[in-house]
Length: 271
Picture 1 (cartoon, rainbow, N blue to C red):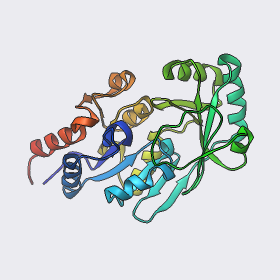
Picture 2: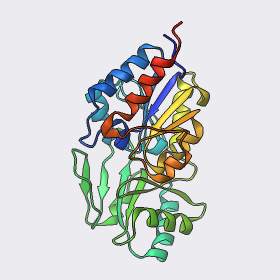
Picture 3: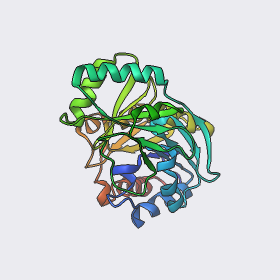
């Protein structure tokens, strides 16, 4: 069987994963069918490797994964970090000061680099429940003592959209700011995106943007949609992503990925 794409790129939260953090049997079967047809599957997530690897292990996933909003390319089968980009901590400190000058004090968390890098959580930062490694710190200064992939910011009153916009306006060209999910606004190295990480991973497989169909649900997936030949937003996706998507499918709770892949498998001529 032929398949029109050589690469299927899927976000995790709100896309491949259902709200209970599992992947449905139907979606697993659809992904198995497209990989059997010769396509590669790459997970592309905002989560850093320590917050991703247990999910990949549970899926029996042994390919490449792009983690940390593109900062890390991880080989799941070998449990090995292939590439990792860190945030300039001096620039991040300047950026935070500029943001706080505009919107007032922020609650902070930080993702340390590496296969087992902890997420350090400062006072007042609301951590989402789940089996994820997080280390509470009383002194925010502790966050800056080792290499970081990203900083998470929260505001006591502003919505995620408003905080993201205000932060982008304040930092100019120092760093990038993305909204990756509910309550998850991140400061990243300038120019880093899921698209940059996915392009690196694809190159390792000898694949290109023109070979790729991508699935996502949040504004941090916009660069990936811009890079891929075809971008599919979930029904539960943020309106900013739907606005640039080539197609909108069902939600992550209703096998949106499987519906698209099954249709492509049905409508692709057999060789």
